[in-house]
Image (cartoon, rainbow, N blue to C red):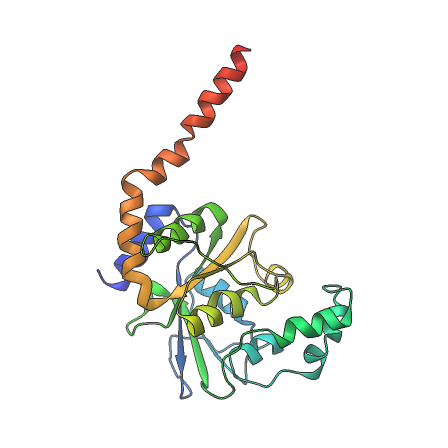
Length: 242
C-alpha cells in the first residue's frame, strides 16, 4: 500500500477523527509551495496536519522556545533552563523541580536539522521520519497493542507531562527508534484543539508496516469484540436480576 492507503487503513480500522501525521527532518532549509511557513508551535503544526494542512517549521517561525530547543533549532532559553518560566506558569511548585525536568528533557542536537516538515501522512511522497497520531486514548491503545505484537513483553513510555507533542511523540521516537505515548501537557492543551479525552502517540516510520499488519490482525477479532462490551452488558444484566 502507498501512504495514502495506509493512512486510510489506520483511520478506518480504529476510527480516528483526525489524520495520522508524518514528520520529516531536513538538514537544508526545506521549501515547498504547498506548505505554510506561518509562525506556530510544533504542537500547532501537528494540529494543522491532523486537519489536512502542511506546515514547515524552522528557527525563524517556530513560536515555542521549548520545542525549538527540543528539535535542535535554537538553544534552550535561560528562563526555561532555570525553571523560572515553568514555576511562573504554575506548572511546578519548586524552581529546582522545573530545572531537573528541563535538564533531563531529550533533545535533538543543536543545528543537526534546519527544517521540519509536518503534514498528513497521506500526502508524503518521501518517507517521513516519525508518525504521530493524536486522538482518543482507546484508539491509541490499539496502535500500541499492534506495536507490542512484534516482540511482546511490556511497553515503557517516557513523559514529564511537558512538551508532550514535540518531545514525547516526536523527539523520543526519533532518537530511540521506539514507540512513545503521552498524556498531553499544559502547552499543547492550551495551544491546540486537543480534547480532554485525547492523548498523543508517536513511533518511527520504520515500524509502520509492522504496525499496519498487526492492526489488521487485531481488526479480525479483538477490536470489535472489545468495543461490543458484551462482558459488561452481561454483568449489567446480572445486576438487574438482583
